[in-house]
Length: 150
Length: 308
Image 1 (cartoon, rainbow over the protein chains, first blue to last red):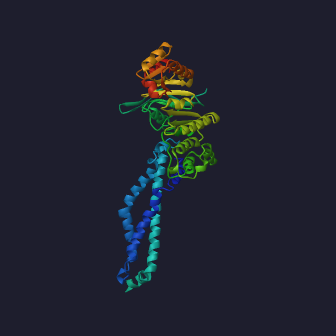
Image 2: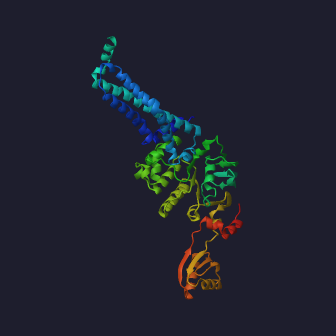
Image 3: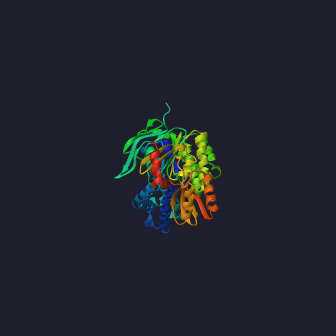
C-alpha cells in the first residue's frame, strides 16, 4: 500500500475528459434543475408554507432512492471501463505495484466521484432553494414563522 | 558472475487440458535483442505474460536478472518495460498525459516525459488526444511507455503488428538505438522471421508451446529460402535446371521451386532459362514465414540441425 498515493494520482489524471467525471457533475445538476422546474411553476399559497422543505425532500428522494443506486453502479463500471476499453489491465498490472494497491486506488476514485456528485447535489439544492426564495417571497422563512404562530 | 536477463526453467502453463507453454528453457543474455519467433498460437503471448507476472506458471520458475520472480516480488518488474500486443493507451488522454500516468506510478524524474517524447519523435503531437493518433504513432507511444520507467529490459509482444513497411523500418531503428546506445536488453516476439532477423542478435523459436531452437541468429541463417520460378514449359525448365546441377524441390506445369544459396544464383538460373529459349515470367524468393519454416520439410531439417 506504500504506493497508494502515486497510483491514486495516476488514477485522477486518467479520469480527465471521461464520461465518469462528466456524469459526476451533470447527473446531480440535472436532478436539481428538474425539481427546481417543478417547483418554480407552482403557485405560492399560504398552505404551501413547507414548500422549500418539500423541494429539498423531493430532490433528495429522487436522488437517493431512484438515481443513486443506478448511478453508483454505472460510475463504478465507467471507472473500470477506462482500463477495459483499451485492454490496459495487462499493462497496469505489470507495473511494479501490488495488485491490491491498484484495486484500492480504483475504489477510492469511484468513492471520490460519488462524493463529488453528492457535493454538487447539496450545493445545487441550497443554491436553487435560495433562487426559489427570491422568486417566491411568499415562501420565505418569515412567512413560515408567522404562519406557524397563527 | 554475469547473470542472464531472462532465464526460465521448465516453464509450463496449461489452460484446462490445453498446454500453452511446455517446459520452456529460455536463456536471454543481457544487452542483446532477442527475437522470440513462432506462428500464431504458439505460446508467445502466454510466455510474455508469464514473464511479466500477469499469469502464474503451472510449473517451472522464472529468473529476471538472476532473481526469482514470485507474485510477492513485484519490485523485480521495476526494471522492465513492457508492450503486450496492442499498446495500452488511454485514448481520451493526450500523448503527454498517457506518459504522465505511468510516470506518476514509476516515479522517474519529471523531465523524462519530454525526453521520451522527443526520443520517439512525438513531441509535436504530445498535446493531441491519442484517439486522433495513427497506428504507427500509437505503437511509438506504446514503446515510449515501456521506455519511460528507465528499464534495463524491455519485453515487446508483436511490436510491429499492423505497421506498414515504413513503420516497421522506423521501429527497427528505435529498437536498435535503444539496445545499442542505451544498453537495454530487448525481448521481442514476432511471427515474421524476416522482421526479426534484421534486428535480433539471438533467436528463440517456439511452436506449440515448445522451444524448437534457441541461439545466435547466424546459426539460423544457414537456412536458405528456395526460389520460385514461373516459366512456360515448367517440366522442360525443371529438367534443364536439374541437368545444370540445381536442386529442384518442386515442379509443375509452370511453377518450380529451386534450392539456391546466393543471390547470384537467381541471375544464373534466369540466364540459363533464357539462353535455352524458355520464357521466364517470374522469379521470386519467397519471404519465409515461420509457418513455412516449421510446417514444411525444411523445418524438420532445421530442427535436427539445431541444438538446445
